[in-house]
Image (cartoon, rainbow over all chains, first blue to last red; front, side):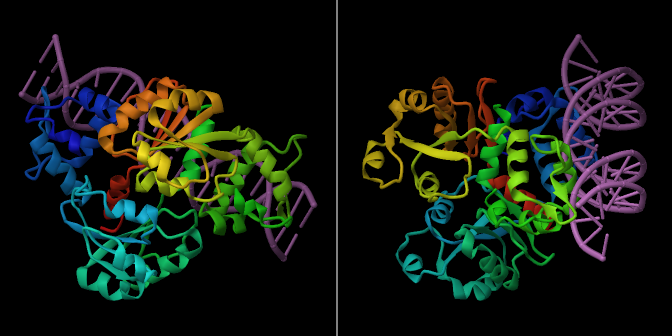
Length: 190
Length: 190
DNA sequence: TTTTGTGAAGCGCTTCACAGCT
DNA sequence: AGCTGTGAAGCGCTTCACAAAA
């Protein structure tokens, strides 16, 4: 999304292709599905797409116009890395809390957001209306943590543990499996 | 792949579904494309798939039968997390080295594998025949690091930086964009 | 009887090709 | 002339449904 802050200049689908790697065909097709801006007017013209019209149209169509809160669960090296990603490009997302079963960590780690022991997950997630969790605990604790999150009312989990999670249908899961990425690369470079 | 070391017992496609999250239909379909074991004989029977037949068949079909070396570039919190994933489930992949421009880090960090200053990337990658890199540097350094890796003869990059990489066609890239995962979840839970 | 193996249908994304707008 | 917008075709993966094998 940062790419759309290029300037006020219109971007052609070919330029967007160069910036994103998606073909200009795909770009045009996808944008056409947006159905225009808030007035329904076309987003593009013969000079390209105006960022200030395109951006809100995308956000609205994708339901990204609401601000959402997320938290980090498991404050080991991986979790604390995401705690401290700075203001980062998580546009529209607000890091609201971190959790760990180890009270030492929640007390000692310095962090831009409040840290809580894991047993407070239910209360904190409810109080702050946190919707998404980055799950950064070891694989052997991942399922238990996911269940606790689900019970706390979380709506989505980004799972970094090499572990298939079983959660109620009310919770969406996106898995980030580094081993799968390595395998995919191994196949690609064959 | 670790899952296939369950025991010597045959695994049914339904069991593999529970373990992987892929539907039993997909599992069976994909396995059927393997075209049998090295003799061409069927891999499954009415009791399921025998791991000792299935595993080599998959590895052979996917070109995963070779052992490949990878390295971690950027030893901040994220990079050092992957350095210390233990023997981890990167079956078939061997972590061979870590790199950082900050010599302090490469000297102070304790690590199961040797760490090198970034300027030794070319030499070390060549000497150890490292094929894949986990790129864990800040976004603003990612492109430069990727170019250095490409020049060092790397074949694949798993990119954790929120940054589109431009690399020669000889290098395959897999992007892990956490912000995209958050967006995908936000859309899913709408 | 349980589970595989597989044609057929379904689905979503990508590519093609080109009419139409500016 | 240049670029968008879009029907139509293509493609790969998933799901369905069920015959065949153990």
